[in-house]
Length: 262
Image (tube, rainbow, N blue to C red; front, side, top):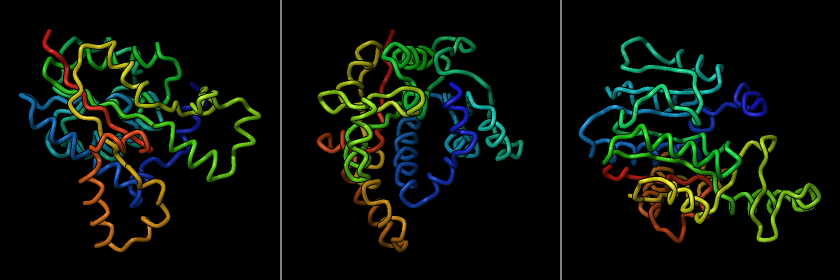
C-alpha cells in the first residue's frame, strides 16, 4: 500500500484530467454518470476511491447527495480544499475492500472509478466489486473503471521500446497479459477478466464503454488541437465509445452495472 500512497502524494491526477486528452475520459465518464443517476429514484451517490474529488466535488456542487471515501490522506486534504461548505458531501477515509460503515442498499449509485486499478488479486477485486454492489440499491448502478491491458503492451512495451526490460523482469505472460504487483501500481485488465468478475455479483451489464478510446494513443496531437477541432474529436469519440469491438483497445473503460432485484 505504501507504493500507492507515495504515488498519489506526488501525482497530479487533477492535471491529467484537465489536459485535453484527459478531459475526454472525464467528459465521457460524467456523461454516463448523469445518464444513470437521472434514471434512479434517488440522488444518493457513493464514490469509493474518490481521489482528489474530481467527480465527487463536481457532483456535490450540482446538488447530489455525495459520500466520498478515499484511502490516501493527501488526496482527502486536496478534496476538502475544493469545498466551500455549501455542498451536500460527506468525506471519509476508508478502503474499497471494507465498506462496512454503510448498510446494504444505501445508495442509488456507487462509483468505483479508481480502486480496481490498484488491486492485484482476483479475490481483492471481487471483494471491492462485491462491496460496491452490496451498498447499492436494487435497480441502482455501479460504475466500475478499469485500465486495459492492450494499450500498455502497444504503447509502453513496443512504442516506448520497453520490450527487453519487461521480458527480463518477467512482466508478461505467454499470451501477452501484463503481470502487475504493487510496485507496478496499475493492474491491467482484459474484457474477459472483467466479465469473470461480474459473474460473481448479482448484476447485469447496462453498458460497457471505452472512456478514452483512441485518445491516449494520440495525446500529443489532441493536446494541441484548437477548441473547435477538439470539440469534434469529443463528438466523434462519444459517437463510437459504446462500440464493443473498440473497448478492449481503450486505455480506460467504464463498466456500467445495474444491481439485480433481491
